[in-house]
Length: 621
Image: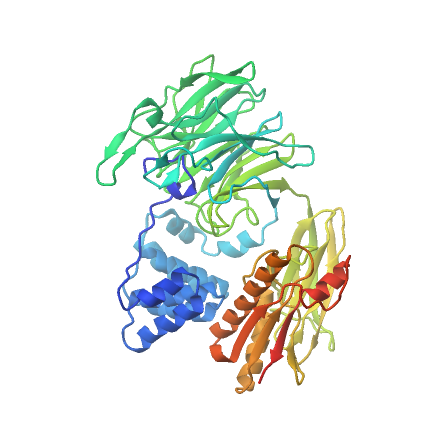
């Protein structure tokens, strides 16, 4: 790609469309509209009628993957890779196997991936360290992540940098009144600013008119005193571009520019001498003393598609660009550098071992340290990038497309406490290995889930002065829950005793433990899957039984919103059970919001809210 300034999508290769035909048209439409169970049915028909091929097998695997049925996903990925597939299919198959704990099998698929793409950095890293996922997942939590509430509804927002005067600068394509970039069919980017209050809230963003042009502007970096700004700008603004006649677009390069603040206005815009019509330079970050400027570029002499570089700055003089070398740069993409006041460099990379897409990494340039993955919750399987940290205010910002588009999130450094759960059989007192232990926040949102080791233990790094909930579950046992109280530091040991139970079936319903969902979401969690698997067993043992799922919420939030959310959760529950082989005519569901409260209260306690947030599994036959 010649452009490296736009959202994370433009830092990745353009996605190739998959092959479709008339046979797969119905299934493909369902797949694209997230009707994964229906898609499975249609793809299975093709496979069973001998109309299946590598594409159908791959789509089947992806469909099962999206309804949390990793066993079936693994089965169809196995068939898919017996046909001609690209390297990425082997890569996802390996990821699926890892979720099933089949690390040796996953490594075999990674071996094939590496043989197909030996020069891919992921292949090289695999060969050097094939078992990185467990250590990456279990690493200490470094930051707490929160929404910033300044993201636009449909447009991209990223590149947030907090200046010392509490002005937050970022770039956004929210200005739909301007031209559209035909290359990506999105509005051009503008630079925006918002004021951060002492409690961390941000004012309504407004465009920085002094710096914006009809074309792309941003991201930015700003000096410690707030009077000098460096920013990226599209060369279209200077009439410099190449014509792509096939796509009917004008391809420009990104360059870096400098402006100074005079009487509250940005003026005296100057192009840096490192700009070129042959390559792009973007994503600037200025050192605390203003003497070094870091940036990303695809200029000659790099190691990958885009690398991180730096130049020295004197009195309006600029040194020669210097590549940061292979300790930081890879054969993949490195971009969005941010240098902190204490000389720690944060950057995004697709060429290092991570959870998927772009991950955010850091390295202390003061020491002979290695590059560190920031881990969860900053990094996800999506693109996570553009991390900046204001050390004096102890707050950071980064961007991610985990919600489906580029949004800005807040990152707060956390101190750590180790919470250790010990899972035991309540009747015998024996420790239980391979039990699932989930850690939840005080609102019962699942943060992570691990399995107990041979000693029945699971350890979580948690924040200081914060309450958590530990929830243990194991097949043929009733789940157990215990609170982790606030503590300053050190270790906290919690005993979780599981009592062996059978599922209770009355003449009216099947009684299960609460089905937990993530806050404001309807996707099935690992804990929810464990409980619903019990329902699947009951239905398999009682082939004439039919179930109606009723999903309820508490009274917090609007009636329409809760009704919609509860219905989404009911349908997600139904879809999960069907995906496990239960006929769709044996289970249905509906959301009731808070129209049928179990506890009718005006100012409900948390316990009362919990009773109202429930799923019921009524026996209709």
